[in-house]
Image: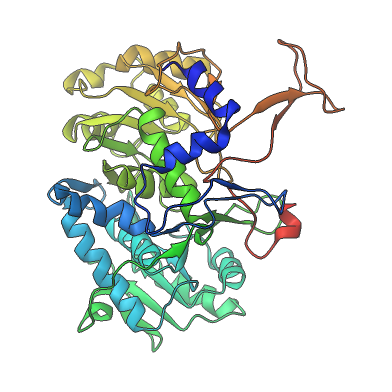
Length: 462
């Protein structure tokens, strides 16, 4: 089918479109319908389903006989470490951590703040939470104590999972003093903290702290807990540049359906292909496309620790893509501007076999024409600019390469994705003629996987 046929099919019958997409998810109890609109403008998707995110991201692949497939490739130039974790190993690690959390009294609906560096254990922590129905809130590792405290007070977590430190080129960032400072500042006090000790800087544990491996000793691994379709998988706070940070809520069922749909239709990867999003788990890209979407779809995801450009040199991108057979690569335009500054002729790429790479995806800021044209010329693959944000969790407008790779239009994210009715309106809310400037508006309801509300702030959301 062409993009126009797919998009027209969604427009004609959104319910049928999303129910069809939902067939790719393993349900404990399948949804009876897609959309609940009785409380508009608070819309909900697949609300009456019973499902578990961790089962769909991990266990089902093991049960299907793909336990030996690599789930996570860890590549850390800042520590000199590399590792591969199979789906079977990931299942074991996640179930063990989830068992430890459950033994300490964490139950479905409890919140857990995650404050971790870019290591595989960050994904293990996220998956362990959704395995038992706990609602995680990842805070960017190394965020200042007062920023972390604001999020602790809003999410009121039962527990915090943190790394002892993060590692940046040339320096170690100790997380434990920042965490202790945040707990001191916060009105809400979590019951305990789980500390993942890193050899580069081991933290001194206090009376409320328990070491990552000790938490798991002598307790049974936890099974996947069924949650309702509208159960929050996580809360992710926007930066707070417009005042108090907003807790974007991501409900379980819509998140599963939408993200799984994007992996083939937008990023054009098949199960088993390697997908790399060069971001951090603290941001929405890390949630959607380092952790959840690739694993739900049965891909191999790359967890990269360090700054890909600047230190030691711009060839880091090329090395990771070549060494790990990356099929689709997703990053921010800033990274490519930095590479271009270091190696304007793109000579360094000639030392690497990039033949497996299909496309480069850019998002997060404006992609200027010079950068796109340079990247396309140097890499020899299409460069797809696509637009989305924390609130949506996946693409509003992009190039649906897995449906139909459309010509790249420099400076444009190409076309709206199914689920998004995007219009250009004047101040009175009327559609503008083609070629005229106006306000970009997206018609409600937003599709599955987007935010239905804000955490404890539905009035603010409306």
